[in-house]
Length: 166
Image 1 (cartoon, rainbow, N blue to C red):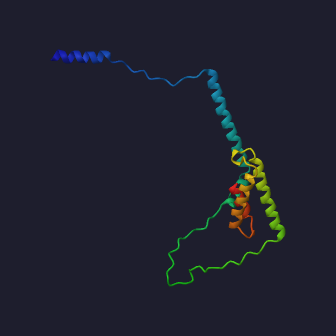
Image 2 (image 1 turned 60 degrees about the vertical axis):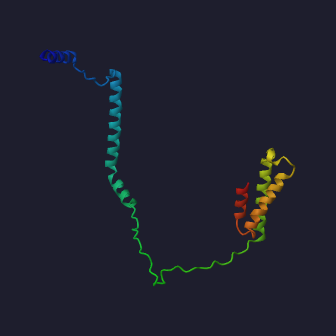
């Protein structure tokens, strides 16, 4: 039994080797000098700007005072009680829209016609519109749908509707 223990100890200790620590990679002298030059350049630039700030320190401090922003503090409100009527919003009825002058309506109609015509010109080779006049029919139906939604022309919403449909 003693022999077995001694043999196993000799086997483990005999196979043990010292571990060699790996040193960090070393660079050539020219590379090391380039690294030093870069570090020196950075330090020189930082020092240069530090000196500039020292010369104009009053300007920096005056500018920073004017730039501070103060935000309004938001305080959460509690839910309004049913007893107080002053917290309820009153419904304000809108005045009926004023009609557009004829000149403006004609300008909108001309713009719509241009959009529809230009669309048909772009799609002239599209197989969807192979029949003669089918693109014109499509654009007229689109215009009719948009006109139903925005029947009296009082805004440019009808133009947006036509552009979306195209």
